[in-house]
Length: 228
Length: 321
Image (cartoon, rainbow over all chains, first blue to last red; front, top):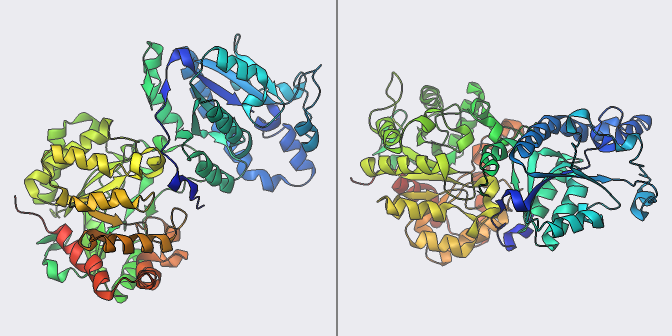
């Protein structure tokens, strides 16, 4: 898919990862998005006989899971901050206007708030329910990044062409660098993936594969800086 | 003399030459394929493995007026000089094979194990003594960078290529960043490759900067050409990156800026769907579609001949050492 805007934008700037000011953000890997059998999207698509329309998405979800598991292990092993951002609400907060408009009113205190076992957060890892597409639509997460002076965020999860794209834009607005792990994210469609790569190539976001990142992460554990 | 897989060819006999194509390759053989990503949906790997089909594709190229193809697949992902020799014999097209290394995911394991000097020795043997039992010789070197800068194994491979170039005088063709082009100042890591090669004693006139039409900056390309590099528009027809009309206009502008003698044209065919039998333009797209666009922006037939005949012959003829 042709995307000419990056021909007239600056190159994506170098990005540095270090323990103090970098984090791994898992976005929308809770059940509605990440359970290809019983999650809300899967159930709904099946009920409406629309499963084939989402086949590219659920194939990508199945393929990303083992990569996210490896990245989680590497990040936790290195001592990198791990955060979760999940589209949905938790009472007493009500569904957001966007959630109501979409009809995706997921109460994360119930089954929709569960994660696949291998992707569950461990003690001390923040889970932020959020009202909008981008991770920083949740003020608590935005505040956390600011208070910790986070400069670089590695993103994995779903949906690349909606929520993750918005998160990258929001991070750029805050002057925070972003790196998307290209085989640890699921786009809704492959066409959407191509378009999103073009969008985010406009001076904003780097893309690396899981294997590339795993090669790069070890120095973090000994206090080193990874320049990408 | 230009070294083809069937032996030396006089520059004047090379004919119309595509300087950056694949005819026989299999990226599924890449030793560290996982570095390219594990997703399968969009990951159509480069693969051309049907002998009879490739004879037909090369035959169509020859029928359209083609004479030679530089096959830029490197050791590590399916380079096979015996197959190339049989394809050349069957099609009547000169084929020049490549010594050097593609991007890190596709590098043979020995690249990590050997020193740059040892790798340079190996490449020199491939150029001067040949490869395999039939001792078929390569005719061009290749350096490939897929990171945003020249570092790690890709830097080591570039130094090895530079050493082999100094001993043999052959040209170095390049892969410049690919998917990382959005992270590289000026859009091509060829600028950094050139600086390193110059430090290593390789003249700019021996460097073919490839893939310039993925993220072109006409001023950067003019600067590289003015230093003596060949500027290779080699993904012609791949309009998901850039419209062919834009390529034609860039080439017209570079000619107006006095850089005609530095320009090369090719397609970088590497997948089934790009072949004629797959519905693509195969090795004929430039003939059937692109030359008309060039003429439309004022490029003359003589200038086209310079880019497709004279310039490749000059690039592929080794410099005295």
